[in-house]
Length: 431
Image (cartoon, rainbow, N blue to C red; front, side, top):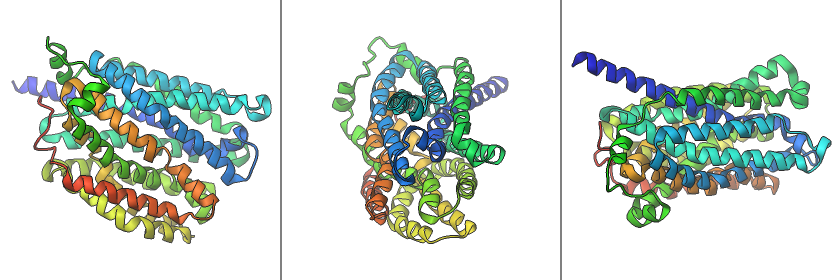
């Protein structure tokens, strides 16, 4: 029995590491676009000043999110019917295709409007991939974890989401040091997308070796198994589906506002040079990555709701003063402290949102239930966050963005206060 227990623990750890590694690659590929936008924007959109070029790249970033509900629907159903492992393998394959397209895309000077059209198509493919990735990976990590540590192990989904962003920015910093600004603008930005495509190939083979979860195997063996469909989701679990949208709205908007947009904000508003801004965000995201499992483990002890409420309260109160102070900050340490404060706040959401969603749904519809409502909320509030911020800056009302994020956090706070404690009412029955 001790040997079997040790073997089971070893197998579980192998699967969690393998699933997390693939998730990191997916999000690295997704975030390379945002991290390298300062260098490639002029290649696809040569007209206008820097803000105008960034606005156009942010628009395509947002359009990529439009495909995420479609990916969540198609691949959520696929993962519920064919298995979590099959869903993970398919999603990383699509991400590889999108990254290769951008790495090899011709510039506007070479082919005119065909250039941004290729960029748009590639991001649509990547959006389709990521829509399926979130549900499959959140479900897989939640189901493969043991009952007493589900918050801890599922937090590694956002460890890898943040890690993907961190690796994208870290690669940017290294290339800045090795190549310099001019080479980065001319051709160096393509290296990020080529690296993402290569890593996706590695992740594909890692995911093919993962074990399937016991939750899915038990459902697959049932003769009375229910079909995973959108109709069944919203007919049988309407409260849970709308709860996922409500708790996601403020969390995803804040996550993008605090972790993705600040790289551009520090350059475009605070006045830092691109290299310094990249280094500030690299260190801040590394610190955020470390505290995710700590917060996840805390939720295993005290519950999920207290952490979500912490995020809702602090984001509502402190978002505006943090960004206003950051506007006038010229000191790197002060900028880091302000960004870090925001990242600690949103950790109350990011570390445990995946496990909360997985615990709301039964296994036969879990991947779809986790993925689709989340993706819908992401299209509306997450993918548009950068675009809203840059658009409001362009019309001279940048501070309205800070109020917008605060208002969304306040709205989600109502859901956090009213939701049940999923740690003690989990629909994940297997240990």
